[in-house]
Length: 197
Image (cartoon, rainbow, N blue to C red; front, top):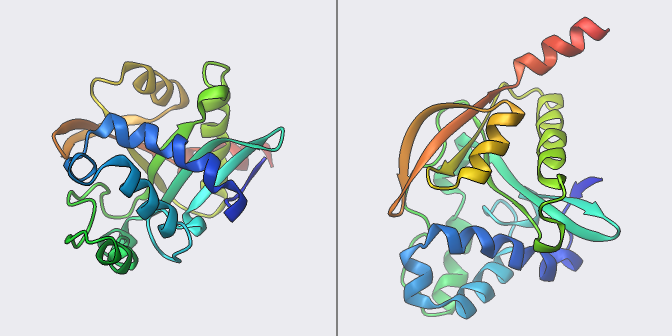
């Protein structure tokens, strides 16, 4: 069941999200350390309109647990999406204006910033099912194009995104890693629904 994340989910969401951060090998996490960054991100969950604010996180709840997370927003919000975090960064003595410096989404896209399955739910097909449900949800909202970035060296994730119907449309760097930029045309879902009606 998809729902927005709540404060009670934070302790479950954080390690799932850190799987992504670990793969990205971002310099800021190396400089500041995972413990401090975990505290910063944890405080950031409460901030409205922040990249990792609870209002951007959807949770697939299974048996009362946050089995998978999907963090997303429209591309037009990306430029200011980390601004709410500045006070928290300063509070922790981190002299940065953002954690992420690279542009990740393209104009007109609804961007799936982060998608991950909690370790205990991996290798059970939950990722694929959750992703399909997420695509349907975003299509129902009237969005036209859903996008994501996947590390070119992450073959298992590439396979899932290909299988679900994402298409590679370009490449970009986030930090030191090269990513395939992939899109899903949400109009194809609307066309299918129209045929059923």
